[in-house]
Length: 497
Image (cartoon, rainbow, N blue to C red; front, side, top):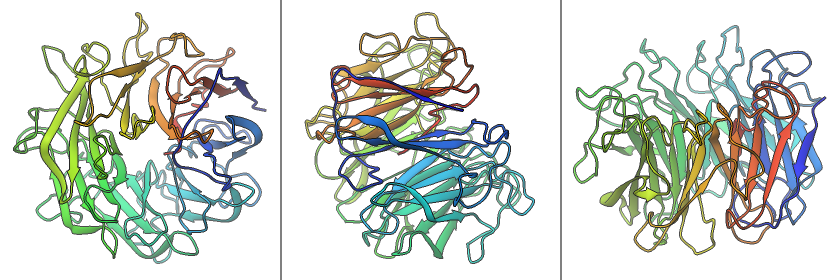
């Protein structure tokens, strides 16, 4: 039996997404993909915490998994229910819904083909009523499941056709395409009054999503996903990380594929490719940079058009190997533009001091954007989960870069365990900052930062994981620490985004 422990905050704050019960306060979904359910190791679960108007509370909290009565499917070993999460109002009823990646599910005898479970919001919060399973072998769905697709390992939502109902992008970077190992695919499902529909879904590989692109082994198309409005139209656009892409003869330098929305949804005719060898982009594409392992979207210069932050975790600079940082490309009326782009790293736009092996922005969930200080400019939090802290290898940290009239940079803030405004101590192998989330959990108009530490050891349990909520402004707005009891649960590996 697992129990959740809450350390009460000193103060509190924030605004953003996932309001599952429509009370005006955001709620928090926490993926625990390693949890044992009914004796099945790695079956996974998702814990949902609801706001009481002051902060997140255990009141009404619930743990969902595939053995909960009414939930479709059934729990199985190593399904990893909760490995990725995304919220959106897919049926347009005013209550946010939750998409849950279950990438280890066997589909029609195909191991690790994967499914996505969707739970719909209501006045009472998330419910298993009318829940739905989505997978590539379902009738009418574009494409077919394959063993090892890991469908649902990456998720993002956005309203790509501006019809008032959110749509869902499902990434499967491990999917093989035309015999090309781990080329990767992205599946697009559109919202409707009845929830996500499959009648006009689209399955994209790199060649299908943009003219002149090739499907190649180990590109990992769909490794990271984020939506936003990069131009002056009302349609959400989609950024797709392709960190294994070769640039000419430069192996695994990485790219980001951007597809723009329209009245009929995302259109491959509008696709753009961004990388560090494009004219005007600062930096140089190098082998193994991993450009695009994480992406985040926000209006960093407050011009009412979204901008794109891209992690480059294996970037070398100043004699440092794999130090990492992030490339920022700004949106304009006509879309993303190289003008004014910048590369930020620790010591230059990001707080701290860069070192070899930091791998800043390493994982697809290691970057998130929001307005954490309420000044109207979007900010970015980027995790460095493999970073050594006070001699503790891979203890990890996260850094806030604040927006300003000229864009990101300038003053920043470091979040790491062991600081006076945190509730936990840094330990080797914690991976603090592996996953990041955002929400306004007390309705004060400031975004709050959620940091997952998926390998945290707590109360004698190994790798049970923890989640720390930093209420805005971070460092002064108060905090909460959440965890549950169970070794290898990886509590917080998935966070609602």
